[in-house]
Length: 114
Length: 115
Image (cartoon, rainbow over all chains, first blue to last red; front, top):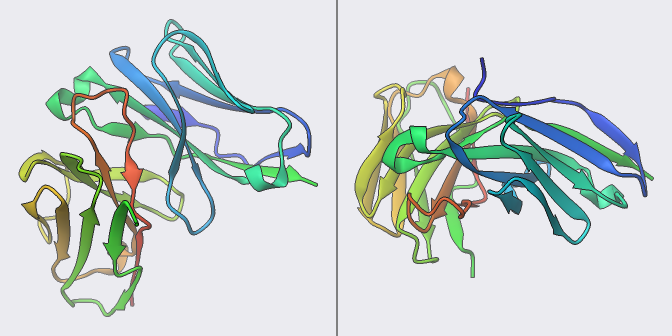
């Protein structure tokens, strides 16, 4: 079983719609959760992080965390063509030892259609 | 000023050659990482150094050797390159390993193509 799983997509939504990206993780000791955006040919860019159950909002982005279900999601409201990218979920857990490195999912490719 | 810079950005080389990738960060972070991203966008940790000390050494062929001369620099040397080494290699940094609420800052990546 992969440690961090995401649907690879592609996920297509029309401009102005809500895009919903999902991520599940296997380690119950996971402490903090990150969403990165990666445009084609570019490096990953941190857009949100969350560590408490519930919702966290930042502009058009909302991260949602449910530790009981081991599930984290990212909602993008009023999607724009410029949001078209691959979205990577990353998890940091205490079981990764003192290093506590991030473990990444394989990403979901999002396309926002004009 | 670029926060995490990698050189070179592109590297095309023949099988069997030895090559190095360099990384420098000016963020004052203590921890640096090398990740490999395959064609399916999967990012896999290779190595991590905290203040010049190796703290993560994943199952990577010993043809790959990291070196950190100081906490602002982390280099990756690859011996006897193979076709399967073709990928994008990302350097990243973070403040401290135990700062769980900090993500990484990534460099721009080095696209390695072995022919």
